[in-house]
Length: 223
Image (cartoon, rainbow, N blue to C red; front, side):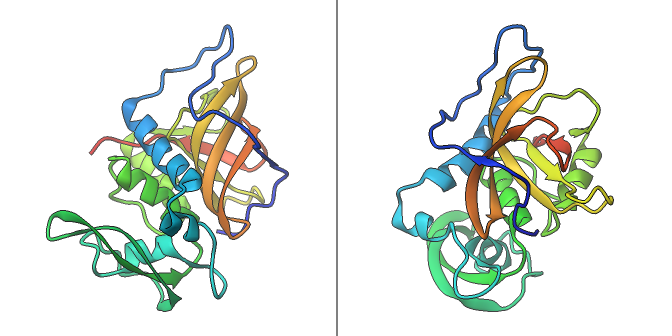
């Protein structure tokens, strides 16, 4: 996923919860969506030294922790499709032999917005089968699980949804990020996302519903 390129306003101060204005026709957040959204938000806001360190690429292009999480064979949800290690090693939770362990993760280099979003789905307790390193896998996942809301559907995003982007409008999915809060003004409105590989880091940004480039939202599915 290329760095986020649309004009987005970085939020200086914002509460994490859902905001809905008068007269809004907005479906309530689900507990699963709240859990997924909170994982993304907590990564961005964490004061833990190890978590804060992982929020930016290191040493070379696309070298990041989140790909390492999925590619490291110490993780029993191992995704072996990652490229070779790229330098940093930092601790993070993994499952080993059925239990959660704080262990060393070897960072890997590849475009990583989908790896970050999949991380949020995984730790938020959502089904993550079918998700991979491609942002387009979130659209496919949504279609397969009946949770895809395409542009033009009138859908208002909820916390924990994966916002899916096609910057050029050429049918190629370029980016994915996690909705963390929503503010309604009429029937649509502004919402915040936390995403990986946005300017080579995990960042928190604001844009309008169905902003340029957004082709749909995928809600997390139950396992």
